[in-house]
View 1: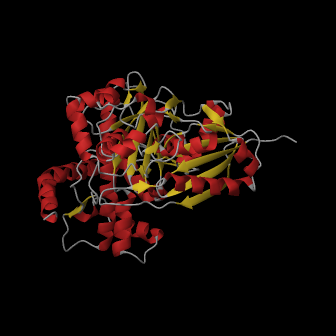
View 2: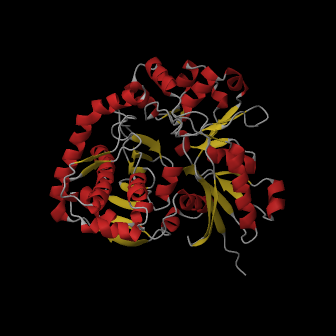
View 3: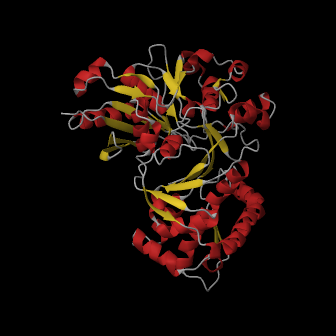
Length: 494
């Protein structure tokens, strides 16, 4: 009897640990999920106990082992979040997460010490942003010197789990590029930055490829799980892994993701970051490839907010029906989707949501469509910025919003490109399983053959010109209100 290999893809997220068992032909066999809690010790802070990630992963491994023999495990994980280990490799303090905002003073100080933002971006591909890893290290150094003195290694979430599984300390290039201390020219830790801030380079983990073998499962875990020679690959950062999970692997291929936040990601041949700092520049899970990415903070979250606050009894089928009862342009309403500030293109924490142009002619259906169109305009901001930097030849859509055909059509029309809808939309965990297959010596073209599409949404060329006019007004509205957003924030702080 032929023993077919099975792969386990694990995504260490913020709200849950998710895992998929996938066959060597890419078939989805089984799925698992364990919820996670986030701690908020102070306003703007966000932490998790790394041991909780491990507990959830271990629970999943036990459940998987009852039904499946696994050959290789791959990983995806939340970017930027900082885990600190002492000389015994014990956790020093809770992990500071990607959405933690406490490091503004450290970001400003670090930028000034390196002679401005453009110089920073030229070195590491991005500005120092509050969510990134390096400013968190500086925060601990300045605010918790005793904890800082104990640090022997830093890790990111997925790499902490790999350490628990194998005993290996490392990080892959895609996650490393989000730490804000990896030099984009050398693809190695930036020795000048670390030295300038008196950070010992030895605390940084060894660098690995995303489908490079990091080790085998520890002997005690093999015995507990009843598995034999299970290999572990490095895996990748969540957005990079999710894009690979829908086949984004070549120059010009793009992903639009509509989750709580929204992203537009495109692989590029360019070796130059965006010096304006409006879009990110990171390493992909395919070694030697990079991608540009724009991020909006409140994508599906905006539509969920409107639905839950004003249409709580409506299901999503009814919401789509209501949207279709309105018209292009929502009878004159434009929505700015900045419920929690915005990243791309404004980098403005004070920005807020706005419904503009409401008249007595409008209905609740116009409000819903305007919300959907406004989120699309927010995604288009990223799309247009990336398109200025590199060619976009192919777009695939994922996330909760991808299930709404009306919304996908609005996006295709605004982007003026066909949008492919994958058959399997399982985020980073599926990409992690694909990386596991590559680590099992499967050929890239065979693994990419796993990706199938259930449909292609074509743009409506007759509506593009009208959408362009609404989009131009959308952009002007933010610029008109920018200073007022700042004043409002000051008033609220009184």
